Length: 447
Image (cartoon, rainbow, N blue to C red; front, side, top):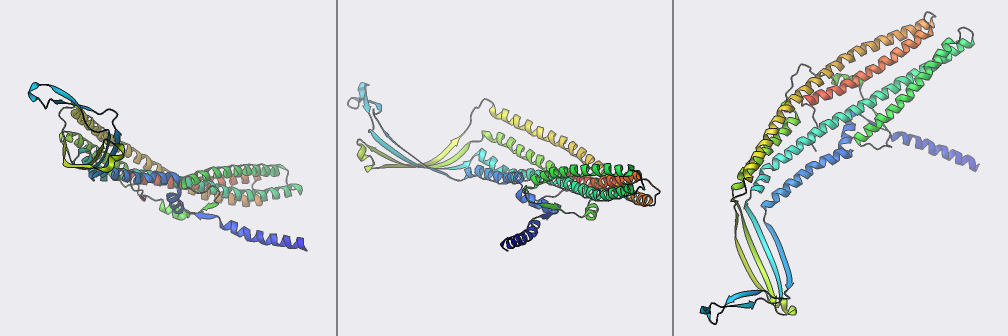
């Protein structure tokens, strides 16, 4: 009785646990995968930190405009006091000098200082470049996010393709197992020879091998998608999509021209030119003096006895202006200006080369998209024809008109055409993303 109760309780727990285990499987669409990736992918989160890093660096550079306040202190003891040379005060006209030891053995100083830059060329450059540096980082992040979105999307489509290959192959496997049973029954009944039975066996084994390979490919592609999206390796997921909606959403105007000025790469190099132009201005301003104001407050402690050092203080204070003016630097300013101008010219030529590269990328993306679109329509028609042929041959085989070899061939053609069609659809979706990127129309969020 006790054992029966234990078995019954175990079955109840197992029955409750199975739905819970199944409930853990999460279904993701492409949009949900992308949203999850933006929040969880370590490399993406690492790259997004660059925005905060740039802002912190800019604030650090601009902090030099604020008053610089500090406190210095020291304590020291003379073992031999310094010597000063003075004239003979008792007989000034004698021209004689005398050595006098000055100061006291025990000393301590406390210095409070405040410096306020008024005109500083380096700080002016930091102020002028602050917003441009932030915008440049935004463009870098946008370029990364665009490439990241395309990479994740293509990985998603690759997994979908493997998923469909497995589904199609499993359907074929079920059908071929039924065909094998029928062929064996006919052979055992003496209606046919063993040729059809052996052919059905070979076909079934080949399909099982293909299914095994498809499942292993699925695992590899799923591992890549997990890596790119930041999904846990043990988290069970399934991918969902709407084929009809996907195809209708894949349509793009192929007659539309391209405006490469919309590409973030162009914006980025233009910002780099603006930053470099400010560097040229910076070197041209190096002849201007640096001006700052300062305030010092000193407290001096002196005593011939160490235990009495801090009994009395001798404070002093001063304020003033500090001017630093370069007179001769060996032609460094002119050389720096020339280097900055040459680097600016390099960026201008780099933009010209980038424009040519982006034009070529657009043509490649457009040609690939049109080719994949055309191929998808062709393979869609082939898929419909292959299905019609298979249905007809199957009926003719059952009527004794066609032999089993023709059924196998029609079935192989059907499976190949179905897989090729799905492959064409997913390739079309990937090429659409490439085309939108080439036109500067692929939108991403900047975090």
